[in-house]
Amino acid sequence: MSRKTEVLARLQQALNPVSGERIASDLSISRAAVWKAIEGLRKDGYLIEGVPNQGYRLSSVQPLLNQSKLFSLLPSYRIEGVDMIDSTNSELKRQNPRVKTLLFANTQSGGRGRLGRSFFSPRGGVYFSLALPLNVSIDSALLVTSIAAVATAEALSEIAHVETSIKWVNDLYLGDKKLCGILTEGIISMETKTLATVIIGIGINLHLPIDQFPAELQAIATSAFDGGRPLSIDPNRLVQGIVTNIERLIEDLPDRSFLEIYRRRSNLIGKTVQVHEGVHSHPARVLGIDDDAHLLIADETGRTRSLSSGEVSIRLEG
Image (cartoon, rainbow, N blue to C red; front, top):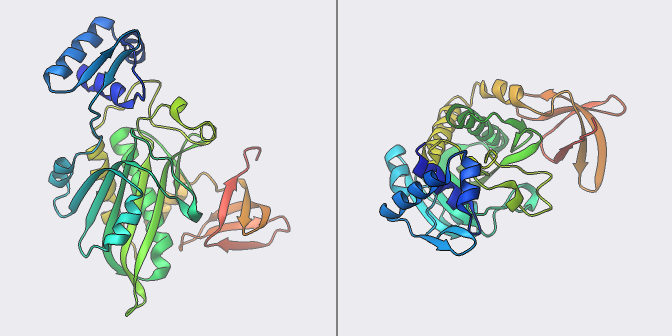
């Protein structure tokens, strides 16, 4: 990554003006190098304002993802990009597209997770949804979620060199905090009683500094932003890698070989967790993940069973 690109990424991440001294410290470069990069970016057409006694501010925030570049990388998809939206998943459900579609947004005002939870989606993250006409059984929805988790974890490893674990069903963790959320939904064909279209929403906290998360999320969420230094990756290629992995793994859905990677990356197997089902909650030991992507647990009495839904949270003391 060039100096200009590093400085640009740092400015994109900042919600407020950031001083040249802070940028130099974050990137381990000189203030002269920061000034040279700023001038180079201005010549490239970026509107960078110098705020007295505060620092630099990017007046025209550039998106992480680019519609034209994504289309060149994924030519078989209809690509749509918007600056802000309520939820990329919700929009694709409204559209009900008949062809492979990728919709991305720079920020979401109503990003959603499982069980109606909200997903914090400020600028500095990667938020996109895929609509895939698949015509698969409704029971396959959990498997498609598992595929998306594996596909995203493998792409983060291969392209960004970020190693994540998977928390059943749909979260990726960096260390002991959530980095990425995945929400799989479907449009059902009433004629065949199958999923006519699968919609996969993926949100990755890529470049947002932790101190800019809401206070209630700072203890449980994290970002790939590493000590002030932006990742040396092209987010468009990260998305390409995720999408390519999803398509490849869906082709292998019948043999379910992807579940071996899912199990290997699981951060629950062998741990004590708290199982929340409706208003009831109880501790259990996670034994494994079966071939239907169900969670195998043993409760306090030693009784074993599988979970196909419900919320599982890790007991940190366990």
